[in-house]
Structures are given as C-alpha cells and as structure tokens.
Image (cartoon, rainbow, N blue to C red; front, side, top):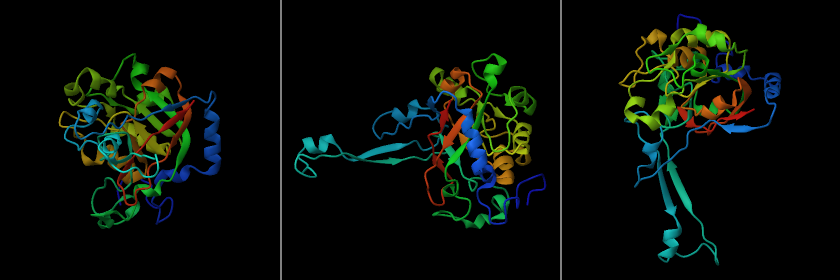
Length: 302
C-alpha cells in the first residue's frame, strides 16, 4: 500500500471504481442543476482512421503510438464490381475500426492502466492483468459518469492562448479559478491541442500539464475524475515522458493511490469560448472487459 494519503480500502476491500463511488443519486441530481441552457457540446477529438491516407496524422497524437485504422468489409465499390445485394435492392456497408486509444484520441484510463509495485489500486494483485485483459479494475467497471463538470481554463485565466510546453499548473493557480466539490469532474484546459495545426513538431516538443501538487489538491477535494486536453494530465518532455519522480507521477497519484479515473486528450476550445465554468459532464466508456481504457465522447451540457 502507498505510504502517502490514499483511498485504498475507503470504499471496501473489493472496490474497483474508486471515487466514482461518490456519484450517488443525490450527487448526480444536484449536478444536473449546472445545466441552464440545454446546449450540448462534444468534448472529443475526431477519430480519423484510414489505411491508405494520411487522415489519422491530421489529429493530435503522441509520436510513435499506433494510429486508428478504419477498414470497410463491404462498401459501394463492392456492389459496383458485382457483389450480390443482401436482398432485393438492399445494400449495406460494414466497417471495422481499430483504435489504440492511449495517446491517440480522446479516452478514459481505467484504474488498471498504471501502477507501482505488485498491486493495482486498492491492493488488487497486478498479476491479475493478463495478456487478454485485466480481471481487476478494468474499464467495464466504470459504467456511466454524470457529474458536475468544473472547467479550469488556465490559459484564459492567464491571458494566454495556450500554456507553454514546460508549464506545470500549481494547486494555487487552480484554486484561483474554482474549488470543486466532492464528486465533481475537474476539467483542465491547457490549450495545447490547438498547437497541432501550427506545428506537429512543436506539439511533440513537450506538453504543459498539472503539477504533482495540483493533483494532490484535487484528490484531497474528492473529485470523481480528472480530465484534460493534454495527453497525460501531467506535463510531458520532448521525449513524451514525465520528468517527475515516481512519487510525484500524476497517474500514480490519481489512478493508483486515489482511484480517480483520468480522461485525456479532450477538445475544449468550444467550451472555453462559451465562457462557462460549471456544466453537466456526461461520459460513458465502452464496456471493454478487462480494458485499460476506452475511447470516449464526453459531453458538456451547458
């Protein structure tokens, strides 16, 4: 068990959902009051998969990660070439999509995604993560997430378009913007995805993110999840790795020690332009049994 404050055992010895347990019926009903106009914004990046075009490379992603692949098992060209219709006059198209979501598209990390030592969150044996998936703390444990979202629009607060690549957001700066309540989803905007259109090399030169202190502050306030528009919640260097030691690694602080799910690579530009700090946050990962994460299309209801 980690030595510093943590949530191991807090929700029972068999718990695999972490702080999502805080989203009780009363908390969810209270969160719905954050919607005032009914406008719905998608907070996801597009998934542009292809096997014969550069489409996937036009979406921000970490260098070297396998990009989405989109195949068609039957399409219009097949019928033009003489394929037999399904029925009289009836034709259809079927596709197959392969997405390795970590580092390539908007996704949620499961509590089995990262750990230290021989135990996952809450003391579950790391040996239960097998070649066919994780039998503990997989993404299928999440279910649906409906909570009050709180936007920490850090660059707007500082009068910037985006944070510098080496910027690590301190807890004090987050507290100047808002103080979340228990069960909220903390949504962090760095503005970094917009750099992609200007320069892929600049995007890969590093990434701004939360400091370890900011992560601990959010954990102390019992947020149910932490979401950000960068690729790792914390910052990255030009090798796309974290510089912090293990004790200060954001994935270990939040996922491993506190059972706080992470949602990464959001698109927050429209939400920022709307000028709203509070909204209803809705997300439902795919029920991939034993998955270390899932592609996601989070929604903000204003």
